[in-house]
Image (cartoon, rainbow, N blue to C red; front, side):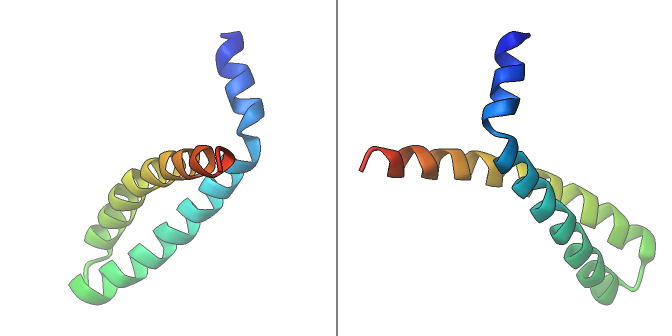
Length: 72
């Protein structure tokens, strides 16, 4: 449990940045989904599914990017 808490503390800024990106992405995806489908239900579904996957991908992308640039 202590490892998880330390991980959260060490990555607090990145978690906040990821959450901010997630909220922005959901909003944009919902608007685009609604404009394309005309269905609010479909827009909400798409806007929650795709950005959730992207948020996880973004977090790990940032971790890899940061580690790569620390070694140079």
